[in-house]
Length: 262
Length: 286
Image 1 (cartoon, rainbow over the protein chains, first blue to last red):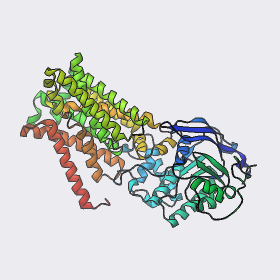
Image 2 (tube, each protein chain N blue to C red; image 1 turned 90 degrees about the vertical axis):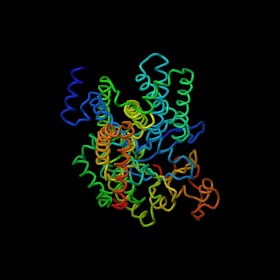
Image 3 (spheres, rainbow over the protein chains, first blue to last red; image 1 turned 180 degrees about the horizontal axis):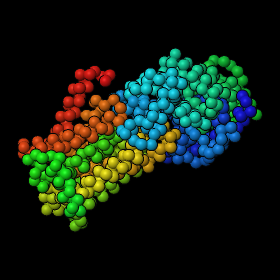
């Protein structure tokens, strides 16, 4: 990690989210750091997607989410890229991948045509992700893996400071998953945004994450991947019989910032 | 305003030099359809993507109560119909975002409540039933010059709104979080779209009636979906189908002596059948 790793890009302080009279998230303190891959893990219903929605400003919350920019990223509010878990489109919805790029970037309505810029942007972004052949395909007919590539290409187009990925490898076969992770690692090395990744897949987490946040309505623990992914933590979150059979000591357990800091 | 109307009449006279378009009431009807049908179809394209057909139906049926309230209060029923439609649209979007209930459940509750309220008012005032006939089935041939002007203004406003918001509405329909990451304010946009739909629906009721108004929004957009490859072509195909079925429906109803609104909707439905056959013929991948 370079020096820039010490600049926080996203500081979450005492964040709570209530919905329907129920506390979905409470007292969340976390830092998502510049240039790092942070994995967010937790069982179903732990509030992982809700946390992403709070960062996006989609759900009301109490507490603070501060965006701090490091010098190298310039001034102004940081850009957030987001790759949702799924999209709400029918299979025969008349919206091609190129249309999707056009409605995301051009001002005038897509029924007056697509601007040359949105087309060249789309071609460049898709080519980078090895998805150029999908450009004229209807969005609703893409497979899980194809859709993820398109969504990622779109999220990266604006060179975001923070990239939020909600279960990027769900609905993707194993080889596709590896391709996706390698691609992600490569662009992450090039652009050095902070990456927050929701995942169920602990092998993806151990291979790619610098830091891990374990969430189950509140923070169970956070720290570097090796500190956090212990049998104790996993059984606290997922119940006994959780995957990952190593029997290390639960050093980072319960600490807000693991030893990786500083 | 008089000169504007007579100008529009002469335009229709030049464009359609046919016998059925000669009487002035037919010219008004044709103008009304030229204004309302494409506006409804254009709004219908994102409406179908949002799966809001039921919402549009609920607004249509709220007109029942809107008209009854107008007659009761001694205000022109057209005004109360539009105002009440807007109110119901606003109320549905507010309640929908604040409960854990699914959208169709919330809409279902509002739908039955407003219809029940309308029936209650009408049953208490026996004389009201006469006023309702024209709203239930539409009364395109009895439209006044002022209403034609109102429809023209609506059509222009809808065009302006879609020019500004169409891309963002489609984006919101794909995924709310993704739209938000690009700076789209979902709730405000959704509310504005619901209000525009309410405006279009309540205005179009004069043309095709409460029972059929949703068809004017949904059927052309659904037909376009069968054959369109992209968002742009879906928009233009839907608008073209609505114009052709609107004019074709008026002409056919003139010669067949059928209800105009119903004939227009039947024309649009024929386009749906045709495009569905084309889709099948080209195979699912088309």
